[in-house]
Image 1 (cartoon, rainbow, N blue to C red):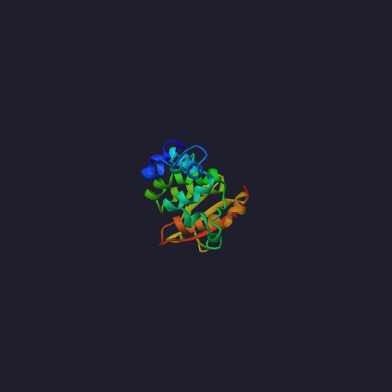
Image 2: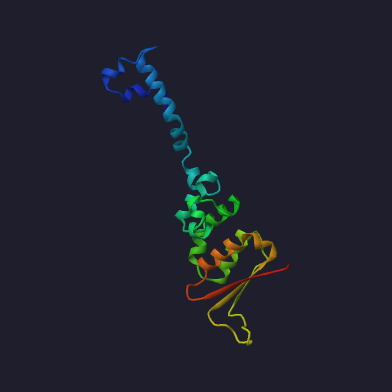
Length: 177
């Protein structure tokens, strides 16, 4: 807020006391310095809600608003709220969160999310894979990830657990590519 506008917000008796070099002028200057950062944020407020332009420190808040926080932050990490993947992947997940929510519980969604968080397209989701006896395992899904995704193992397990149907069991297998 401009320094000349702030006195207008004060009672009339105080407005008359805002003269060059006065204590009130100094206080108005302090008020202006405190309001400037907030005004800058409000002037560009839409940036905070656009995952493509939001500050990195705000991404986990946005992720929480669209239901991704449980997937992105483990129980141990919840104290620090630090994500386990880079911000570009978080931005992509937030942008596609509505699509993922509509198709929740499908192999296609599971594969898409895993592809984003592991930065790999070499992901296979096998529904009702054959068991040891060769018969299909009903209500079971096997997720095959490349060995390069091992560094994201904990996150991949949270993704599978949170995005598969609740009635389905799962396993994750890492394989050489």
